[in-house]
Image (cartoon, rainbow, N blue to C red; front, side, top):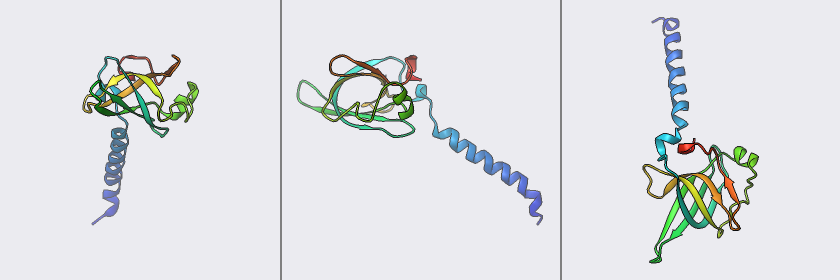
Length: 133
């Protein structure tokens, strides 16, 4: 068997598989989130300052006392820093209003557009374009 004959097709196939895996890893906001902005008010439980996207965790308590735990995707830390955010902007126990795009497949998930802090300061997270892209 002549290995040189198979080297180029195998190398090309391997390269295409690796490129497809990298492309699959980055997702479209429009594919995961609805385009209409919603608003929720809740209490921050955790703020994960991680790449490639930060995560905002908060609880919403309804009038009957039932607690819903939310997990919402934010922007990358680099972009957040350019917008004035720090790791300490959202601390557990802070009551905030979240503006975002509801997740299509997670009933208690969203893509954060902005967070309104106590006192009314609005901190944007990512683009103001429809769909949160």
